[in-house]
Image (tube, rainbow, N blue to C red; front, side, top):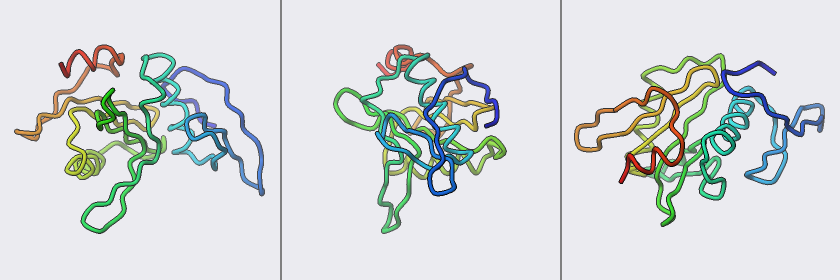
Length: 154
């Protein structure tokens, strides 16, 4: 798979029904190894192992019902009160991060009303604090440690 702008990790990958699958330790099952899934697996490991995000607070591929339509967030980080805290949107490495990507997260945030989100294609990473009143984003220079983001929200 493509080298990402993230630390290298070891994964359990095997061939199943003529497709490569990767073991997702969050969902406790093998999933098809697409380019976006490669980014998801690496990025989630990065958040947990390098940045101290609690694995137990992460929900992967969380479904949202929005005006009768089903949408899917790549990941949501919950706080200690089980309330949504941060949206994580991931793209394949060949998908450029654009205004449309930020708009997609804004749609999810209309329902979740979180203060933070992260967007990455494995090459470029963005983390923002959202001002819900002004609809403006305050960008972090890099992905913050979990303790930094919790402090920023206090």
